Length: 96
Image (cartoon, rainbow, N blue to C red):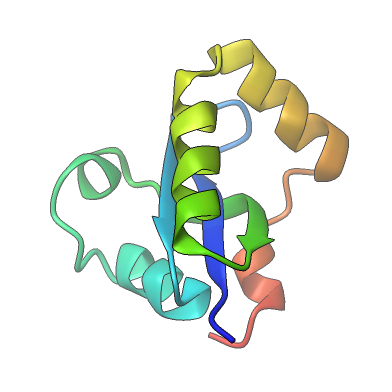
């Protein structure tokens, strides 16, 4: 059974936020950290994983991603504050 992940990256606590979706969280975060992904995340140095959630279908994951991308910035900050109050880099807890 495939798993899909919606994630939020940042460059520092309360810094720039990026919402993405992937089917392999460890690989995708590694790509961001190695700056292999051209564009917004590379330009802003977004390598710290501060939030992710898991979905059983790509449709659910993309719907959640779309929803989070439409959220106000303050709502996203509150989400991270509630679930990861120290703004730990959750990538360190993954097998990267």
